[in-house]
Length: 369
Image (cartoon, rainbow, N blue to C red; front, side):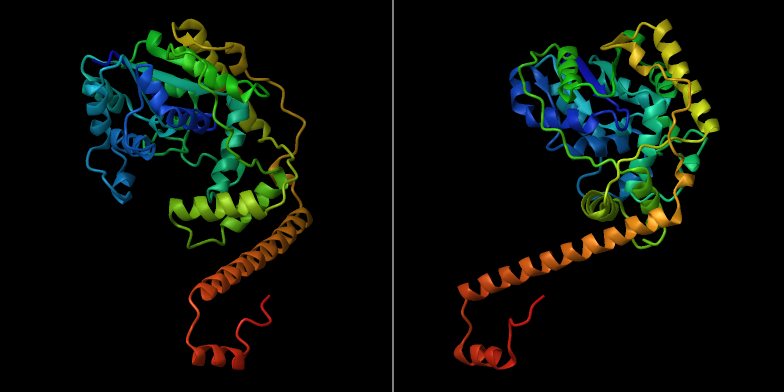
């Protein structure tokens, strides 16, 4: 019978996708070592996070959404190995009631909570950028939009304020079973993967996955994108926003000056205070800290960077002009490729003689851009 479930709850923008890539890439190898990654595919962990939090957005998802959390639990409890892992960053905002439900559903299986974490003064601006890349329109001072706790808001404070996350999950889970993996800027990407495996008591011989390309836009580009988002009124579902705004517009055709930025002094002071709260909780608790707690301690001095409000209209005009030009080149090349494929298909299925004569008469296939 499974002895323990490691539930990796986030935080957002702390290498969660990287770790999940590794877990699913090595699913069979981990099973051979007694570690189960339950579910038919990784989307089941996302769906289960919505179910556990009673999120109404679950009803808008396609496929089997009847009881995804319980489905994973049933698979965990039936596992003959000692360990199982479920991972998705959308678990983090769960309420104490939701967390207690998770504990109760597992029966005799011990629930361990895993939190990958970054210092909040770095994390919050990075999250605002990621939110804009997913269609967000508010400025950096207006993110996140809600101040009140909302377990259904995956982009709210409850999803990335480490002190708040710790206060909720520790209600039902002892400190000793809450594992903290601090992330340090500039560290090897494989470091977080190796520490995760060590926590699972698995040999670190399983290679880290390739680091996914996640383009971080510069100050001017992200502010321009935020203005563009306001005009994209029909991009009202997560799939469209991810495919066309995050992946195509931000990740493919926009230039990238890579200029870093800062929030206002007032927001910076608030972020510093929240980060210090988290460090104090961990200093006085009995949590299992896998790394250097100092990596979560914030610098108190405001960095010498520009605020998004300092971006000029001329700078944004230059970025949008270049974006349009790159997009036009890309659309033309895609059309050329489509025409080439059509020609290849046509050669495989030669039409009747009268059709070929008619095409020749009207100049079919000529003067394509």
